[in-house]
Length: 240
Image (tube, rainbow, N blue to C red):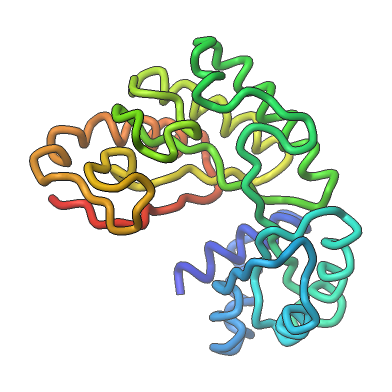
């Protein structure tokens, strides 16, 4: 139930501020299928399919990933807020990592400037452009601390230093959330892989995990203090 409530807060903020009383009232009216629907995020190839639009109409879809352009997000959002039973707005997510139409340096390169103000400015510009194209949710910033250059996602983070990473992460959250929702990722230890890079089964040794815990969590805590609206977990097992 708490997960559905958090998704509803997230969605309804798109339309207007919602009080706890209004959210509880909405939850009480929802069927089990509609609650599960709010947890349903599907990927699309640039635009929603007819089948996905029917799920929106039936209240069985909470968001879409990779729908791009206001000409594609507007029709399906109109179905959500005018034709579904409870009129709950959809979330439109996209990996806006280092720019949307205007491309900025990758986060790893940007961290080399040691300038959180610059990181905030580029995230704000990227969020503003994404919002203009109908996107309201990005899966950034990545706050993983990476010390092995073979790891396949090192470009998305701020390198090996937890202090610098925490400053850059907080700055990016501030920048993005002037226009769209940010997602801090990944909890926890995703950058400590000791097997094949980007493998879903990649894992770190128990001793490495325990020794590394403080550096993993610093950027995460800094982002959460900036009221990050969503968080993403890693895809692999972390001992300890």
